[in-house]
Length: 324
Ligand SMILES: [Zn+2]
Image (cartoon, rainbow, N blue to C red; front, side):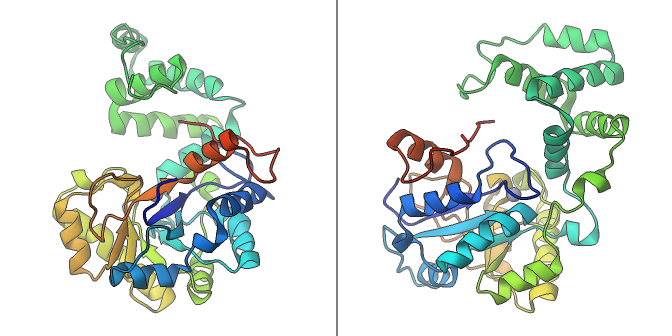
């Protein structure tokens, strides 16, 4: 792992009522990862924040970060951290506190719970797309797909992954993709509300994290997938609303943030400074110099992969992280 200060980024966990999903890890793998990284390198989150602000982070310093305010993080990862006396940053979008669910997570849950495999989901999606936009239109468009070159920068994608992404990204676009997914959810007798129930932590849990020494940070209000493509006014609304909601819950103003889907531009950074954010995190490791609002993070799946290659201390049953 790189020897320069960085965060480790976590998303999904499984265990208890939380079923395994793509890239998810269990409590044991989480504990093994902490041991592999070296417990002593992991700073309490408030100390990291202080050191980042005073430019005194050391090359070996690492911190733990959790994106998207997921219940599985609270139920599976938090007890492990309590046992080890660790704290982390929690980057919390807030629309779900108003009962508005981010589609990204809901669709993931639908895919994971209503289909036996990704292939089965892809098949059902393509069929629904043919019903919605016309069979001939989809067939003609798919004829243009060159499976050997499309998204070749992602060598781990299977031909089926490429076909699905071509259909979704190049043929349908965001609005029709959303329409088709919502139609499928209804056909399966599900709803956004039923799928979104219990996916995220609530206000009491956010407050309890904050009181337990875990800094709560911004992650936008509605979790757009491409903040950088939004006009500055909308970006400002996303972060100001997010900050205001979190202040209501925790009683203090957030000073830290993570960029949703790693998307931001110079306007975003100006807005964040304007609302008093001292430290921000990217969603990957950068090679060049980074500003305090663009601290690098390593995805946990890269470390799990490294552990499996090098042999991890005590987890023969580690569930492999799957690439998307
Ligand atoms: Zn996120």
